[in-house]
Figure 1 (cartoon, rainbow, N blue to C red):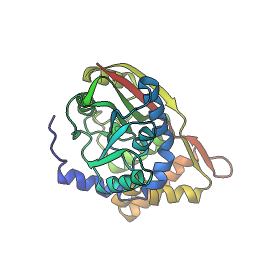
Figure 2 (figure 1 turned 120 degrees about the horizontal axis):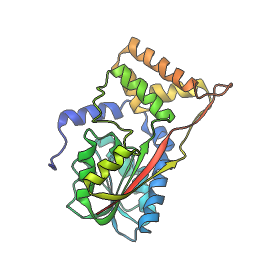
Figure 3 (figure 1 turned 180 degrees about the vertical axis):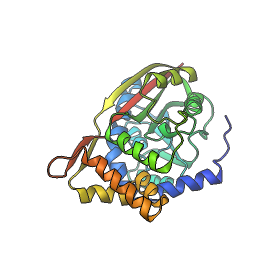
Figure 4 (figure 1 turned 30 degrees about the horizontal axis):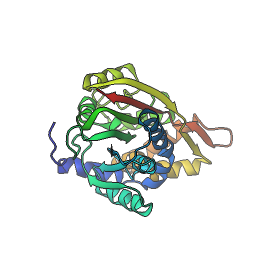
Length: 274
């Protein structure tokens, strides 16, 4: 697979989406998934002791920071320049061994077999071509290295919301970009075909809590890039209609007081490079 910089059109589209909300509240909600990735890497390989790890689609560095705290020397990459800047500021402030580069997850800027770990916290699972993304992860891993992904289950609250957004945007249902496949048999086949073995899947508690409908509406309409971006893309009338449908979806998970305390529906998927 080529290693060119991402096309400007793709980069612009990604920037538009991830600039649509305040990402930090989202990152905070996703942190338990990144911590679970670091724990799985430790179970597989022990502490980092200065060995090299790559975090792809790193966002603002949840997984990169968790690995660096466990002794790994991490390169974190993301397609969106703003994410790279924020992540670099974050890890620099913490004094962590994390370098940052802008790069497409399908074209990692590292040599073949140069990494002991590849992680991605709810990032690689959205690759346009899952098979190619898995193959790229295998390319950069040395034999015996570990790929660890935080992914979504089909039965969680996040999946429920994703279906509503996809329907509103008219997203094609061609099966090629199924972001929920990674923890299923089809995902194991995909990883095996890319050169991985010993695939393990574990559920991860990911609390998705909102104290009120107003808090929920603000998160969806202003903070979460995926949801806020979809609302804005649809325009005022259709965007408001989507936001109402998203809030209604959450209402299915709320208690009598209107508070939501649900499981986001996360998984950790890990495999060994062979």
